[in-house]
Length: 472
Ligand code: PFF
Image 1: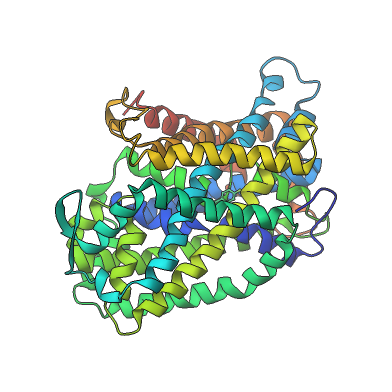
Image 2: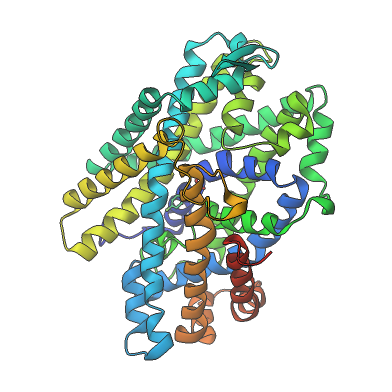
């Protein structure tokens, strides 16, 4: 969205915010984290956090944007103006919120490149190639064909860089020609189709042999699988998926009309985003358990959706076309989210460096290209670069994992703590509640107040200390 434009209706806000929120976080990131961190127990932890933390922060950020009509840096600066000592220094929070999307966009585009590749992979390969029993070799080792195909792709720098650049060119072209509105309109049709397709695949998966064990793994929490890492991962996922602690919701709030009901708009975004993530899990996790057992789920990594979904499509006639349609729809969801990340960055860069939008786009693209290519090479030429090797539990983590960890598990909790201090210490809980409530009923006001005043800061501090290996 360009400067000085606003949302012309409440629906406009909800669609734009949901378009930004629903993306790779729901379809790529949520299922693999759920599989890896214990299935049902992760799902339960995530849902509790969304309804408490996620809700409070989502609504607070929108309110901050609407009160100040500014992006994160401007909003923090304005609200902290005149405050001395500690409260004055909270303005750094605006910067932290603004830096996160700069870190996320490059690797988001790397995954966007993977999705682009899989659109072609589905169209150009006989579906039998991905059959769950097919064998192929990767680095001289014989392994499951779908997994080998994925490994061979991400470790081939030319291909991976090529598809990454293709994705970047498309989203930059959309932003440069100012046709985001057109894409959003397209998305209004494509997003429901994606959801219907996911539901249809979920129903199909119910009939896969052994899928019962997978549904149980996903839907029945097993407390013995709970650990600190469940909470750290769920918290990072919550920030990523709801697009919070990265300035975007502050910016969206700034474009919202005063008379629109903030409470119900935020409810809808929260529900929609969580609903899509839940369905994506319901589609992928029973399939991975059906094909490879619970072990395969626990060993899941960033490739889960790319390895498992082709196997699902290979298991029924015509699956190739359904697979291509699936990845095209995911590509759209990814593109709308990437465009909103790019817009946030362009807004920040042009405002802070006082340069034109065009120059800001060029700068951001250069940054994305450099970090993105380094991230891709982390799977091949730069595989020896493992920046977090000094923390024992993150030994061996690749560049993509490191960027993801620093943004989601370190910077976002710090940004969220700053937002909470801003709300409670600077704005005041009464004032922000008045802003949020307006003339409307607000059933979850108590949840908001309790989270903001009591829960968020201590819990986030624990998460942060644990994520960085200082405790736990
Ligand atoms: N929430 C998006 C997703 O789940 O894929 C990612 C994202 C998009 C984060 C846009 C931030 C943002 F500004």
